[in-house]
Image 1 (cartoon, rainbow, N blue to C red):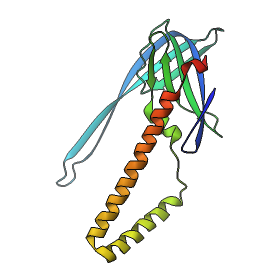
Image 2 (image 1 turned 90 degrees about the vertical axis):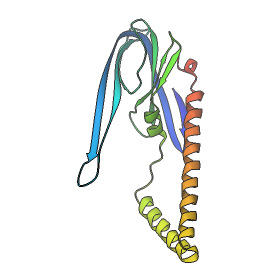
Image 3 (image 1 turned 45 degrees about the horizontal axis):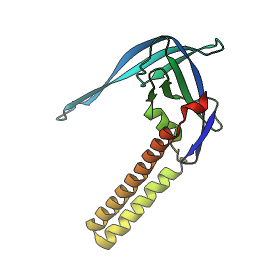
Image 4 (image 1 turned 60 degrees about the horizontal axis):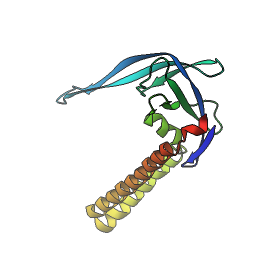
Length: 185
């Protein structure tokens, strides 16, 4: 059990290590679309989600099953595998985020679940206040400099969001590299 903190979120990692007794894989294709009304064109997209069903037996003979979504874990019967899940402070459960195959020395991450674990939720009141502030500043910049002021404001917010997103991605990358699988044995 290890604890990590990113963006003020404290996450405790738990693991189960065992020999693969059985492993199965299913694929799900999700199709979505829209448009087609009036003169608009129809847009259709699809994505495939891999579902891994893995049964592990630890050294004491305890069996546990894991349903992993979007990992695409490469393992077979007899491989030694560890599954790690994270739980936020104050919560009772959390998603599986890492699978490490000791036999092949391969590691599989679910980046979207890792990002969700460390995402900072804004209080509901912050969003309307932010919208009002943006409208206020846009109006003031428009009065001072016209449309050039609006363009400058948009460029400023775009750059700010880009920097924050890059910092967040770097924190996630640091987190992934900081996991020492030997600490879980």
